[in-house]
Amino acid sequence: MQIERTFTGITALGPGNRMAVWVNGCPRNCPGCISPTLRREAPENECDVPEYFSAFAYDDIDGVSISGGEPFYQAAELLSLVSFLRDKGIRDILVYTGYTLEELTAMRDPTVDAILGMIAVLIDGPYIAEQNDDTGNLAGSKNQRIHILDESFRKRYEDYASDKREVQTFNFGSYVLSVGIPTKEYIRNFNENT
Image (cartoon, rainbow, N blue to C red; front, side, top):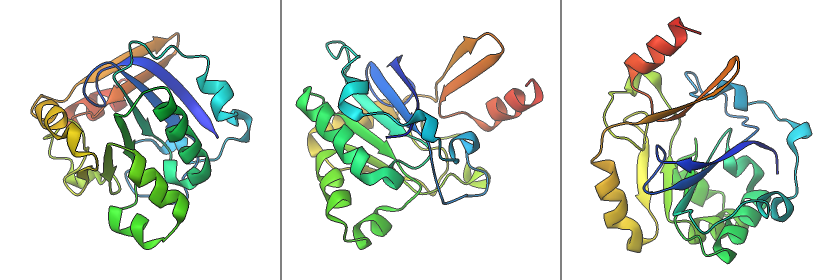
């Protein structure tokens, strides 16, 4: 799987203390993409899923959020990751995708169907900058939908969704990484100051 980065201690992409995984590669090229640097494939980031994720401790992780890039672009590897996480006892798995749920189910792909059957939440649809109305802390634009696929997580996500948007910032020398669903003002300020 081509993985750009993985962080733990994330609270801005779902309820609880989370691991967040960003994958490389997306053929969709949506205008206004929130993560344009992750569109390109990155063979240099190719890793073996069980080997890579065995390096993390899972005792303090409440859930995992997977984004990109486009996670379903690497469907077989995504299924491997979801299966690995479930074997570690993680059931709260959230996947962001530029596809709609209808597009994914229309693929009639057993791998995609298996993923949808194993994750708790799917947030679907491309990010559209013009539809970012600064509401909601899980989806960046109004067209994106939050699908609770495992009903046992509904209250947890409904409670989380009532909070304000949060952005966590990590500094790595001259490199800054913002994690979360930014407001329009945050994006504007970030772009003006970078």
